[in-house]
Amino acid sequence: MPQYALVIDLNTCVGCHACATNCKEWNTQASFGPLSDFDPYGRNPKGVWYNRIMTYEMGEFPDTQVFHLPKSCLHCQDAPCVPVCPTGASYKREQDGIVLVNYDDCIGCKLCSWACPYGCREFDEADKVMKKCTLCIDRIYDESLPPEHRKPACVLTCPAKARFFGDIEDPNSEAYRMIKERNGFVLFPDMGTNPANHYLPRTETKVHVDEHLLEAENPLFLEVVRRHYKGG
Amino acid sequence: MHPPLSLIWFFLTAGISIGLFNFTYFMEFLTLFGKDTALPKHMVLISNVISLVLIGLGAIGASFHLGHKLRAWKAIKRFHTSWLSREAVFSGAYGFTLLIFALLRFFDHTGFWYHFFGIITFILGWLSAFSTAMIYASNRFVLEWNTSISVLYYLNMYLMLGSSAFLALTYFYRKEFVGTYIFLTFLFLALGLAFRLAFNIRQFYIKRPTINEALNLPHNRPIRVLDTGTTTDNYCTEEFYYKKGKELLPSILPLAYILTFIVPLFFVLYMWITGRVDYNFIKFTFLFIVVGSALERWCFFVEGNHVQNLFYGLYPEEGYTLRKGYMERKKTKISYR
Ligand code: SF4
Ligand code: SF4
Ligand code: SF4
Image (tube, rainbow over all chains, first blue to last red; front, side):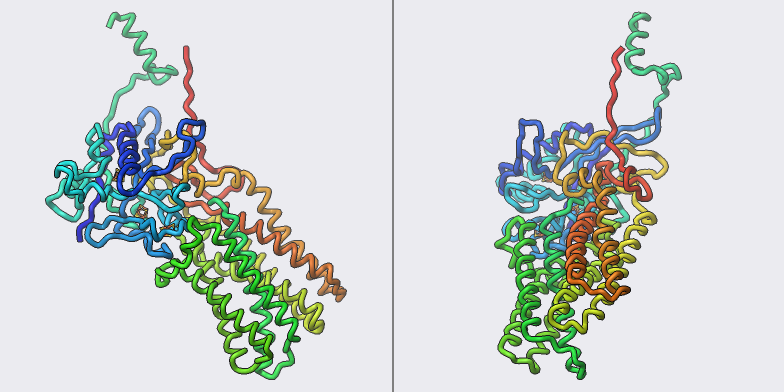
């Protein structure tokens, strides 16, 4: 059975939020209707985002790595958000494995968001229904678009080319190859959800840092001063 | 988790309604075995009207939790997998058969159909209660709820509410059963206290996932949240992490224990031991249980920690501490020379 998904390279993702912004842009103007925004230019801007980028730091100083993790619905193969829905509004498509919400059936009970271990569903306070990443189903099947544009908006926009899209069950797809060749992994593997979206791990890089730089409060500042005096 | 007031309201109304019907019909049921427990007609009717009004008000209240109330009828489509769907169907059917039962009593039809609808209503009431309890207990991503203790003490609280409400009715209409219901109220209060304690003690021993498990990264490397992508809270942080509630929990939880269990137990034991049955005590026992249970439910929600909070660094680190233990977002400190 085909299973479309995103594969995201944590090595190259620079956390620029372009994917999130373009996702919001596309999904606000396309067939699924606007994603609400409250107080967008005020002190407490709030709204629905299908894709959010988190930034983490791993390791202990000075051996630390910062990485960015874009997280949208992972289109789980055993999606726990689907069976709990009382109305059948949440469903997983047979033909491509995309998990969707039927806005006409959703009663806004929020139970599906309780059942998602990843926090990938958001309640739209304006429309009073649950929303989530659609894997840009309205782009990938749109025959009026040139074939190279029949990809999710977030994939097309990523300036670092960190995002790939395809059928992870099809050995000929880019997504399948990426996962196999570069040890793709999934979030929260123990939860029994079997997410379709994969992440490509970071390669470890070791950088030697001088002792005296570690002690300075702002190592970069010290480096600048040193270079300045050395005329470097 | 953020406590929805409409769900606390549904708990109280459905709890009193189903609990009260449970004991009302139980007394009627015993007459089938030749026991002298038949209740006067107006007692049955008063009890049924209270149950009907409450389950109706409960359904209206619970609908405020829905984004689209008018579509609530659609909640029958996934009966075979969704506990919420089952709850909606069973509680609706319970209200309907309860109405028929009350009408039969009103027209003095106390034969086969009276007991038939009594038994059906009894079963539907408990199926509805069980389904509600399972909505919480089956959520495997809120570890505090994901236990059979949640179900047991949820159902027991319906019995607590029901027996104390029925105690007030027996005081007026079948005084000879007051002693029995003082004992039953005591029993369910004691069991409730035991289940609630077990629920709280269990929270110290749950094996909690870590942020490393959530991100599927090496377990021997510490991971910190630097930024969650927005400068303000969003749906996920507000729904699954209730900051104000976490701050108030250490004060409200003991209060909930005192109001729900300790004070009513004191009243009931006093009546039991001294034999002085005073309506004021009965009344206050019930009122304390109701108010206490509302607070108890509030705590139940706030105590629940959804694993999605791991991604935001808002999950308890290890073990369970009431006051601290929630990771704060790392603050960036910049010093200029
Ligand atoms: S990531 Fe969440 S919302 Fe998406 S399919 Fe999985 S459980 Fe459902
Ligand atoms: S919020 Fe909508 S999609 Fe989610 S479980 Fe309820 S009815 Fe289904
Ligand atoms: S696939 Fe489409 S809807 Fe999903 S995150 Fe990317 S742009 Fe947004």
